[in-house]
Length: 319
Image (cartoon, rainbow, N blue to C red; front, side):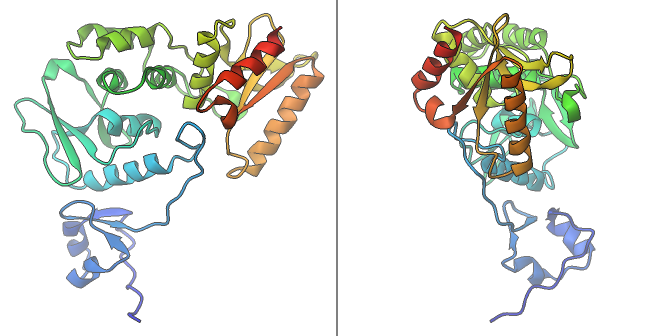
């Protein structure tokens, strides 16, 4: 049995370039040990045990595919040219930690006249400068949220295009349900990106704009919302605060119907990942019922692949 690899210098992060390792005094042979991966030329990444609980949408609260994609972005960032940026699904991972469909390649963009990025594991794309805007998020260059959204319009299913747009225009909440930051973009910016785009997918983007609403907290919530709206039920609102008779906040619920004491909550697999959050939600729903609300809890088996059962349960509660 070979001896365990020697510890790496503490200054090297999860991903690092070979040049950084050499400067830190790491021997060449150490860079070939099996506890390190070489996802790109001149880059090393520490291996990790990965896994995620997957919900019925194909993604989980802890999205293993998105997390792995982000690791690769961090690694490629060690050698990415200064003029390059992440785009498409890679940019979406950077903004929302969301990967609606499998993506084995990093999407890397450049502005003309720069050449498209090339290499194993990379899909290079060139853009005219007036067609995309680029922003920096956590030290990473990404197409802006609005540019990212319109670039995904030709390839994403309509329900995911609506979901991504809804998540991008929703401000994040912190402890106690407080809004802690502005949204990443807004409907006006999404409309402007659509109007400026000569690309295929504009028709899908225009249709999605009619359905995008603020307040969604997950892709699955949007899928549920769309199923209810497409079934001609009254349009629910996202992110609904509910109060008891004394005016105290009971909690914020996934969906609610204006003028109706009916709330809808999607039950994901997070009880396996966060038992404390699961217990808090059970208490929240019980308090809402005691305050006179009907709370419909929808599971992934009721929503996917056919949402008919989920729609029928909500329709009964509204009748």
